[in-house]
Image 1 (tube, rainbow, N blue to C red):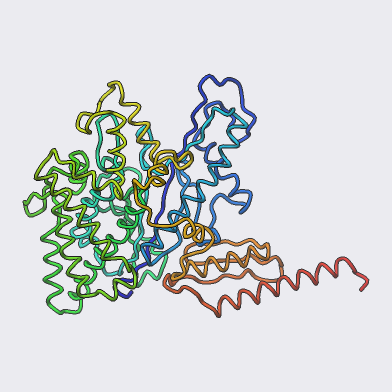
Image 2: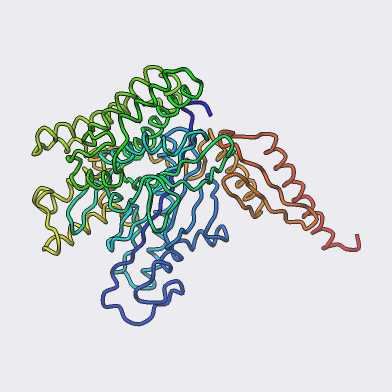
Length: 519
């Protein structure tokens, strides 16, 4: 895998809710929602009814190369098609939002018919519901097979723990306001567990590529950002940090000496004593508490991020052309990252500083904090806690920020220019129907469209696509998609077209023979 070219993807789980049922009695007409207080399973079935009708399944790949399905716990999930450019990944994620919004509008019409016009359907792009149940936003990055998990724990985990200063979505509950909605739910750094504990990196070995060459790094420490800029920064900077680690590792493997020194430097500079505890300390202290490193030092999240920024800038000077091919706006990316770090350093020097307000245009927790402080009429450190009056209203505002179905809060901030837009509506519309053009998702999308055009059934996973034959005498057509970097296989696509056209001709001939048996 060439350095600086990496396959990446996002998986976003959504939360569901239905409000406006107070005083409702009796049964409802909708078969999917048989009780006045419908379950999450019923709401999920209602939301996915158009998907089920169109694709005859609630778990399917779409003509833009992405996957939509219902995950465990009745959480709707959208997995983007594979991308190489971080900005493509952002737009693919926004295309998923757009699709989910359309499904919500249809669900809203259904619940109004069943429950009355006072009923409101909600779909939350967040990670914790009002009852304290957690669900995820998972990032996937293709890395070299030889990168060891211990190395990643020492060099990548500290970045993931401290990046919440710009990726955190903010969270309000009975304990007050914190930077990250995920921090309280992460138990360890690296593990294969997903149920009894939640690691920051899940080690389940599902490469979705050639496992002799690659490993799929499955990051589950992230959050579902509404901020377009934060989503872009999250993917792009994590990619660059992985490049930094891989460059040092490759030089070490080649025995060049300097790589070994770089690896040792990365390990010594960043390894944390207790990553899970550090994650919580940063979140609850709003980034102001220094956390303990393995070597005994204590540094704040901003200072650790600053160490990463220094090394990434040095790497960018060595590999400017390679980085620009993947992220042309990388200088702007580094500037935003540095500005975030500098604002936190200002707050370290002056705890009463309002420097965080400068982060509102691109950082979710800052935009949310601004809203909550306006609602509460007081600074965040004086927010009500426990069961004090006013807490419920703040929690409701927190949830409303993430509500895609109604989208009254965040959309207003976006339309008024309070938060920045990174993608235009026409770009999102294009990715609703098309896959990123530089990965195998392009080939998957072409095969799905071919099947659709001939009214044929298809079956896909990440590494194969099968078009089912309409003829008992002909086998199904399966195309291998193991190489995620291969955006188009013209020979395989032409074979698929010829095969499908041949099926169509045979079906037509068989139909004619059935109509005119004497001929």
